[in-house]
Length: 128
Image (tube, rainbow, N blue to C red; front, side):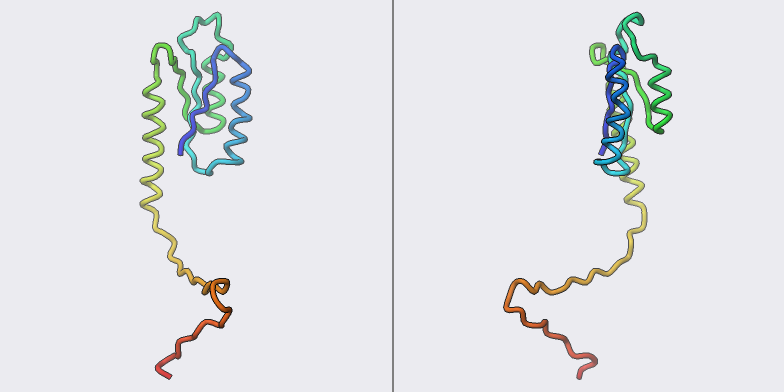
């Protein structure tokens, strides 16, 4: 229902893999799956940072998804990310529950394989 795309802000190659991961999601996941981009290790010294916040935000904007920077070490924004994706999923499900269902009639053919291949009996119309 939801996917967190997490990269390491000190490792540019992990950030560069995000586009591949999004392509895989587009190929294999539901069209309406919720996604959030997360740059982890935001607690690291700026001298160790390989991916600036602006670059992460720009990628998130390109795909129209939310963006957070987190630190699993200091718990910076970790709860916010999970609460955010949970709220988004809940809202999407509530909106889909409010849509009118397609009104269709399903007609099932009798199972010809289970039996002696007799033609199905037909009910007479109009009492005849």
